[in-house]
Image (cartoon, rainbow, N blue to C red):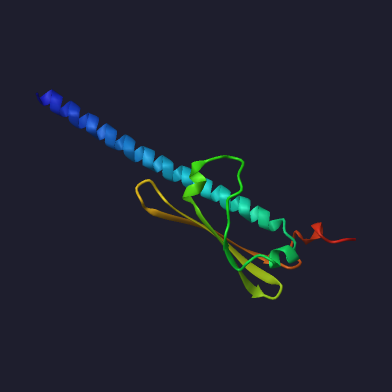
Length: 127
């Protein structure tokens, strides 16, 4: 009887540890996916010239661009905010929010600055 009780306690502990492990794995996977979505959107913004960039709304949701048909992307709420720092410089903040399997809220943000004659402007100049 004692051996059965000890065995049941060990099995219940193993099941609990496995459950926590799967939850941590899911959190890590979604964190990585969120970082990839933010980096992809940031790179898409870097390809725009100043005129295209100025035409973007000050705050708007964006949809992750992906070739994967993954249900994980539906968990994300994505927002792009652009504010004027100076007449020739803008601040861009990309924010993703989502809830984990246990209902805890998560947020990941990227922040950068874009200047009128910035590093990528040479793509659009005519020499």
